[in-house]
Length: 273
Image (cartoon, rainbow, N blue to C red; front, side, top):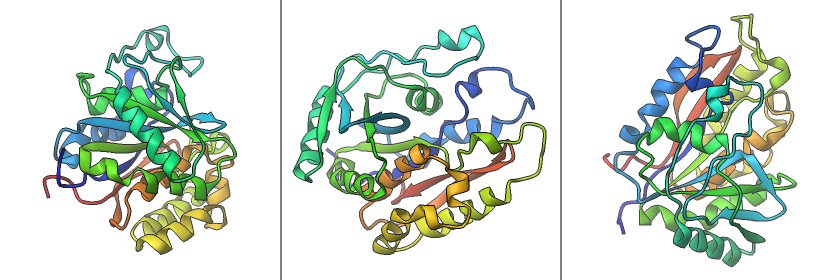
């Protein structure tokens, strides 16, 4: 057990297996890939396990993947054949999964366990860059159907004790996720993406009560509903913001890709600070 609380992180996971294939333009995902590879240095210590909330798993209740050896779920379509043979044989952490379920239940949240579903690409794609040796245990937690912001903030608050056990809590999504407005042939930025990104950067840096109030009402933010016609790629941020407790947040990465701004956020200090 560690005495210093690990930070919590919201990371962008790109587009499908984008980091492991050719793309046009060729450098579209290079900066994001480079940043993801540098996350261990940002965190400062090797975690005992990683708990990941991905925008690609919704369940009727908050559900925890409790497998000892979770397989992979190639939940993307139309990509090169080799991207369906990617491997990430990281172990699971069944004991941590039990603890996650107990903490959520103690907070009055409906919970369940899962013993068959593989880790989706919102988990294994970024983690292949962050911990490429696949030697850190991984547990995935679902979003809850209905996508209620307050519930996901509450789920995060329930998980705060894990940070002092060396567990790195990661939200994997995209800070902008409007598939209809990605600009594959246009270098200009979507102004709604810029507005919403500025609002997010300001919001995460606020004291916890005001931060949570604004995150609950994210759809009213400038560019909010345009940036996220559906909020599944944003709500992992709510979980890690809740898990931050009173710790401050800040923007730790900002990129321009496909005509959008994509950002990452960290709450709390790195363990080496």
